[in-house]
Image (cartoon, rainbow, N blue to C red; front, side):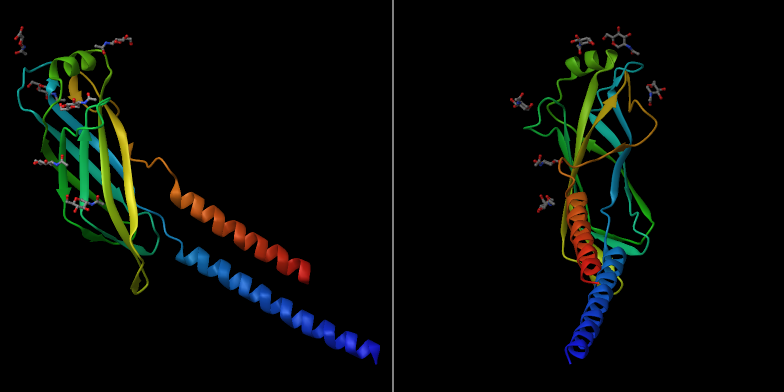
Length: 212
Ligand SMILES: *[C@@H]1O[C@H](CO)[C@@H](O)[C@H](O)[C@H]1NC(C)=O
Ligand SMILES: *[C@@H]1O[C@H](CO)[C@@H](O)[C@H](O)[C@H]1NC(C)=O
Ligand SMILES: *[C@@H]1O[C@H](CO)[C@@H](O)[C@H](O)[C@H]1NC(C)=O
Ligand SMILES: *[C@@H]1O[C@H](CO)[C@@H](O)[C@H](O)[C@H]1NC(C)=O
Ligand SMILES: *[C@@H]1O[C@H](CO)[C@@H](O)[C@H](O)[C@H]1NC(C)=O
Ligand SMILES: *[C@@H]1O[C@H](CO)[C@@H](O)[C@H](O)[C@H]1NC(C)=O
């Protein structure tokens, strides 16, 4: 009698743990297929004519080439309006210029470029020209927008995307390095979120192993 009830209890426990295991794997699978990566934003090029020592240009504009990469394997991205703001460090209180591009949709594994001139005001040009000769002229570029991901047929909620970078400019008014400068956020929000979800899944799997 005691044996049979123990056997019945064991059967129920096995059934229960395999249920939990299935649940765990389903959760893991869903997490793997639903997780999203924010687009990679970078400044591919910058040209500042007044800093080009080969010409005494008074064309007070900055040319820029912004690249947006959707690295998700199977998720599209809906961008809200893209707000670009330019600063001449260390003055980060008053922007020297800004540009806004309308929102758009980007398919998976696609990249988009936004190239334009932005009018700038309040740059201390003589100091900037000296700094450029010194190899220390830097412009700050900030991008603020929000993105929604297209997962299969539905759209996720909006995720804020606020990133920026310092771009070094030489005495020809050109961006110093050929390679793009990646715009990054101070807080790696996505990684933190992913780490938390990953930890939860780990705890779940260990728990189901203990139960077995
Ligand atoms: C700098 O100015 C010179 C003379 O106008 C021009 O030939 C050159 O292409 C400019 N440099 C860059 C990086 O555009
Ligand atoms: C730029 O202007 C300075 C002085 O105003 C002059 O000495 C120099 O030759 C000019 N350079 C060019 C490339 O025009
Ligand atoms: C953005 O630039 C426009 C001119 O292009 C200017 O009128 C506006 O004040 C700027 N906005 C900010 C927040 O700097
Ligand atoms: C930043 O630049 C603006 C415009 O040129 C100026 O009015 C302001 O005083 C500057 N702020 C600092 C902290 O240098
Ligand atoms: C040029 O560089 C030196 C050392 O790298 C620095 O001390 C100096 O302030 C710089 N000058 C300008 C005008 O940026
Ligand atoms: C972008 O700029 C527009 C107009 O100034 C503003 O309404 C919008 O909230 C800004 N978006 C972000 C993400 O800052």
